[in-house]
Length: 354
Ligand SMILES: Nc1nc2c(ncn2[C@@H]2O[C@H](COP(=O)(O)OP(=O)(O)O)[C@@H](O)[C@H]2O)c(=O)[nH]1
Ligand SMILES: [Mg+2]
Ligand SMILES: [Zn+2]
Image (tube, rainbow, N blue to C red; front, side, top):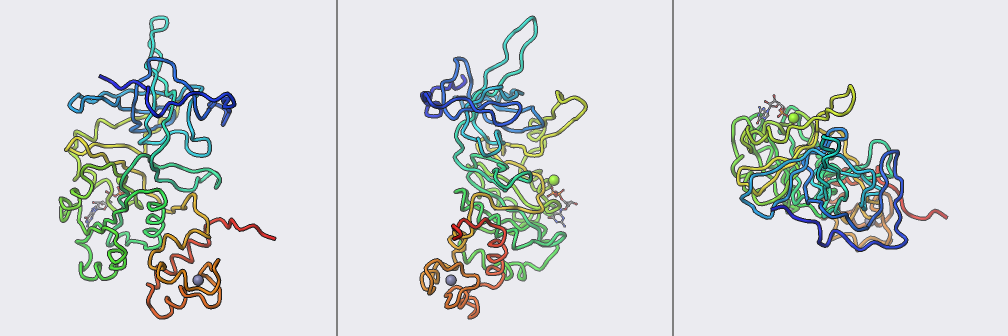
């Protein structure tokens, strides 16, 4: 049995809500009625125009069923200012129909509002949200003890982004076979002090992987981090090889170009947990946050925020700033404070200039 689309995701259409053209190929409107016969699916991979989706079944024991589909010309979606589709999205798909002896490609008719997203600023324009993955519970921030050594500024960007989007972050330091564990624990102690889960593992030596797996069991997770830190190696440890093959997808319809999906969803062997693999990122621009709000995501500032002389203190240059004083007195970790200043510079300033 497959789920029909009749629930909260579809809302009665509003008179004023017309389809709007957002680019050359798609018209969207934010609400509306779906035609009969659509089925509820989850996007597992996107390569070019091709979307690999899994049919969401009411029966948890049913064999998984997959479809390759494309976006319909008219879509019901609230994603006007963000990636139209993303891995993890719940969608309504109209199955292929017989036409002149051929079967038409199934089409995505509606994208359900996203519960959570892992987003970054778009490479093309800062005004658009680039959604890496959606509807996830946990963000696994994978970094390496060495080659390449973790970058705390990048960890901090991921942490801010996770909290901003309501995703629970987990820091996972791989390749601990290459560094003294005591040193690592001390160097990263600030994160456990902030209440963030942190694991020390070696994917090749299979150290700490089972313990780490327990932290993601029962959840939808997304795996992110720079390239070379061991994402593929860790995935292979977490999954059986045969499970991986299922999500292979490439766009064969694009003339000449053959793209493979960089972001893909996999199932853990327990049959409930999922993990989304993402390509290695070098830079990560936090999306949807202004400079003025940033300090709310650095929780070691919580005790000092209210004590600054100026209520709109940005904790960067103002006199009588309690946060800065705490930093000078070494009550606030110096690398975290530097990270704050660094991130602050990259975020938009929303104050009205007079
Ligand atoms: N020493 C060591 N090397 C590792 C470990 N995990 C992965 N590697 C190596 O790091 C390199 C990059 O791994 P890969 O999984 O491709 O990283 P990805 O780019 O994040 O997917 C490979 O040569 C792996 O064998 C580890 O725990 N210890
Ligand atoms: Mg890889
Ligand atoms: Zn201040």
